[in-house]
Length: 125
Image (cartoon, rainbow, N blue to C red; front, side):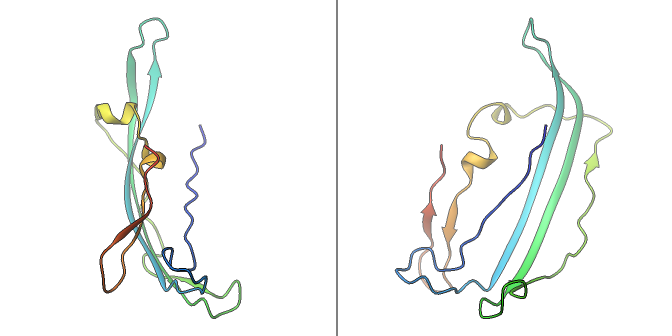
């Protein structure tokens, strides 16, 4: 399995009629749990072989006025915590086996400094 994470961010205010770049920073703090499993093809039983947890923290400062390749600077943390392989497996949460999955559940919100937050892109499910 190859599960790559490809987030995208808009340079402009997503609810504005203007396309002027105004992005100044990106902050993410996400936790993930992944289960390596085996499935009995006859019975459908799912057997957890390994549980892995990790967290991604990200803070990027952006200056859209700078040239391409110079606009973004990775701030702390530079190094991420390594994934943690648990000594004792966790049961798979029932909601992890059905939709919406993480990708289909993502929402793009615009949270202005002043004013009410707005949903720009709703979840797929």
